[in-house]
View 1 (tube, rainbow, N blue to C red):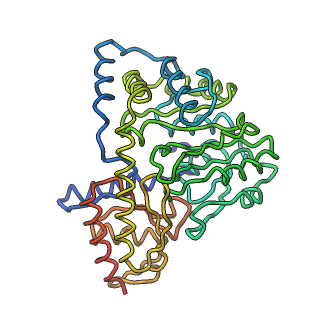
View 2: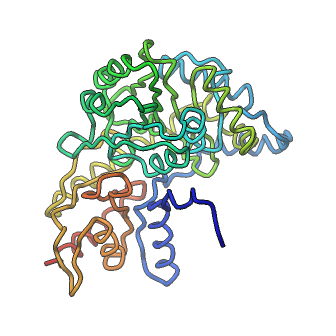
View 3: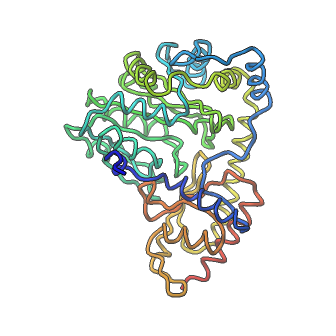
Length: 396
């Protein structure tokens, strides 16, 4: 069977691959602790689920407008103003089937074949593959754990060429939990100000899981705002991963381009999920704040337990729900006749020996690291780190 060549330019998501392997082991009766997926272990708050039930009773069961219901877009507009001091009118907002679709919409609207996209690393796994699908070329700019995994404005400036069309990053970051400060974003914005043809996708899906204070958006700087596509969604802050609601705020031209593309892909987003999202954005945020407190406690728990594991080098994540240690200390070590040559080897060893599922760092552009998601219970985290410590102690 001859399939499309574009399939050869992308790889399977390694987060989904590890989760699949975890499920397969579990199905065989093994007690696997899955720390591979970035999914809150909380239930969607009751008032949001009630809004969805009411939407069914009110017969919100027909096709929806391509960019989203007007009242939801107005609520998103108010959210941007209230929480981020950003002015996006309702016609500058497009609601999509998850923030992932929001990002690929924007890329397809912006990139031409051969355009370069600056990707600070470590990065979320899908950025590079989306760029390739849009026929662009990812240009990676590396940051290490000693720099809190944050690239500098100077590094970005050095990566810019005549072919650069876009930069994409997340803050708080998946997989590192790093959070850009206002001053750091301003420095990056001043570099990009000098290059009027470069767009910015700012992935802010972890906005509310922030342990360092006020969230900062790069679109706050008026001198580049028209070139920023601010991406957000409902999955992380409201424990609504399965509802699949993402959105952008952007210039009217980019919003219209994304709407045009979406109209030929998925059309309007699920009606019931949109009504639930409207409720979430216009209701009490207490459940979100409580989730964030729990994630901060879990972060501190994991970091404290990791102190007892030789060779793990970590930063202090300022948000999200991941720890991303440098584990290169273990490269070259052996178990039986096998050698750990990479973070993927280490992840497979820990999956099969400790029954803990993690994700290798090469999926995020940092092959010396592995990603821990601490979006699970304290008891499971304690048990997982105990198993990992024991398994690593057996390496020679």
